[in-house]
Length: 196
Image (cartoon, rainbow, N blue to C red; front, top):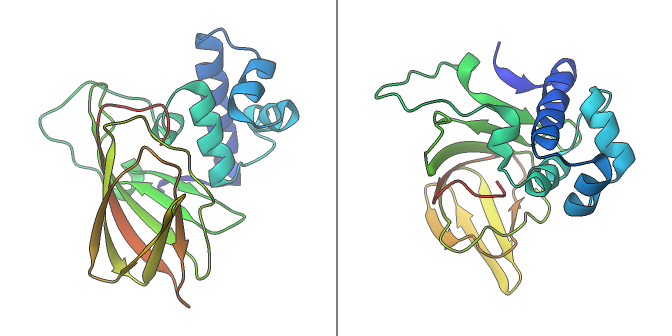
C-alpha cells in the first residue's frame, strides 16, 4: 500500500500538522490567521475528521512555514542510494478534485530538489498555489494531456512531450484543459521553501 492520503490516513496528516504547529508553539488561532484556513477546519483536520483538499493542505503548509512534502513525510538524513517503491512514495490524493501528487524523490533533511508526479483529471485545476520565495524554480514535462499554467500576467500551455521552466516566485495554478487526465512531472529546485 502506498503512503496515499486516503480517508483512513487523514489522522496521520492531522497528527503531523498538530506536531509541526506545537513544535513552533503556535495556537490554532495563529495558524488560522497565517494560513487563511478557518480554526474549525484546522481542528477537524488535526483530529483526522476531515481530509483537506490540495489547496487547504498547501495553505496549512505555508502557514506552518513548510512545504506540502513536510506534511506528508518527515525529512531524513542524506543517504547515497535510496530505492523508493510505491509504498515509500508519499502521495496526496485530493478526494474532492481527484488530483494526485506523488513525491518520487527522497525527503532529505538538507535537500533542495523535489521530483513530483501530478495527475489532474479532465478540466481540473489545482487552484492558485502561493508563490515561493525568490530562487525557487520549477521545471516540468507533460507526459500525457495538455496543461495550462496560469500566472498573474498570463498563461502558458504545455502539450504532451513538451517541457517548461519557470521561476515560481509568483502565484500560479496548474489547469488540465484536456478531455482526459493530464500527467506531468515537476522538478522543484531551490533550498527547502515555506510553500510547496
